[in-house]
Image (cartoon, rainbow, N blue to C red; front, side, top):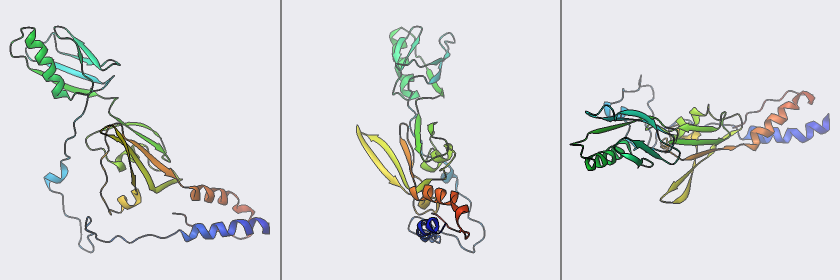
Length: 237
């Protein structure tokens, strides 16, 4: 019993030494309201998120509305190669286009088919191609749809949050920019405290939440706690 305690007690002391927290203070990017009642209400402009283009991809479902030609209006699924097929239009590549760009492409083909002043409206009904991958130490790793409001914190929340062994200061976003693979390291603990902004997430991003060996060690330590003669209290960051 003394041998087990002698081995595990230094570990417990090391883990508890990591305990602590930072008091929330104002910074250049954060204003902390203290003893001032409620936070002020947001302005209307604060509630509007800048638009991000939604690109059509394979297996997305879209609706096509051709004004004045109901026989051409329909809901359809983009095939696995990123194409759609319509009467008078034939097969057209929809992959990588916005809804407006695809509308213009269909209108151009209809003009060549002697349709006078065609007006086409495209809406993306559902998208399986605009997704983000959330992996690592989260409760439910997987693929999650990306919206105009998607941010790092919201993506992690979609995966049911960080797991018990997640490392808040070791979160990586992998992204391809202009054909080059890039990575950004983030501290979601600092984001939660408002020390810097919640970064936007885009389609095809990969988010990886790091794993904390210290937390796993603490779990193993707790499982052995009944073997110890004295109770243990430890706090792990």
